[in-house]
Amino acid sequence: MHPVRRAILEILKREDQATVNDLAERLEMAPVSVRHHLDLLIGDSLVESPRVLRSSTAGRPQQVYTLTPEADAYFPNSYRQLARGSLAALRRMLPPGELLAVMRAMAHDTAAAAAATLADLPPDQRLHRAAGVLNELGYMAGYEEEAGSIVLNTCNCPYSDLAPEHPELCQMDLALVMELTGLEPERVHHITDGDSRCSYRFYLQNGHRSRASLPLLDASAGSAWNG
Image (cartoon, rainbow, N blue to C red):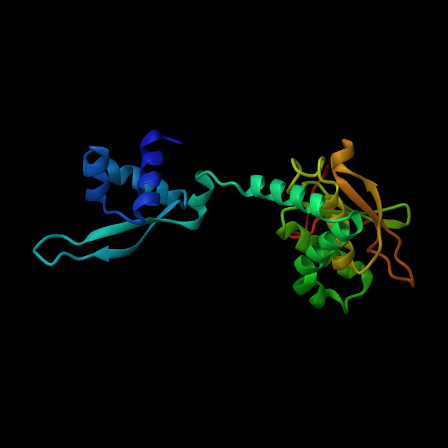
């Protein structure tokens, strides 16, 4: 990012809001140049102008600029460090069985709202909807028919840097898939084993099958994708 735009974000982060004149004074720049950079930041959805500051004396009202929630991504955070530390503490404090129970409870909580709306669907439709929910959670999910079964693929691990040292996260994912689909799958591929995706195979019973020759789908968009 351009240094001036980075500086504007930092000023707004510290001050909560600022006008063009405030920024121009802080940056020692002409207001017209500041407006140029603000326009670019607004175009990137990082800055917005939610209100106008009206002066008690004569003069033009001034726009007040603030950060959008999207701007948070440009500032340091310790989420991964916190997650890593929390998992390490849980592993030290809990026996393996209790740690697994915690992971399953977390999966249940994540899936609870969606699973309630999926419960009455036939298995193939529920699988399709479940893949959509996983996409919303960042898993890049899709599914395909293979050898009389359905294989659900998740091509992105949202915590890939944590999973190798914390396999309990993989157990949480498995529990999440089970909660969403209402089925018990066989895991056939695993990202932490070097595979390009995590894959879960389902054998649908009682005559419930997916649509014939179902391609690998992005369940949130409904369009074919390959991988």
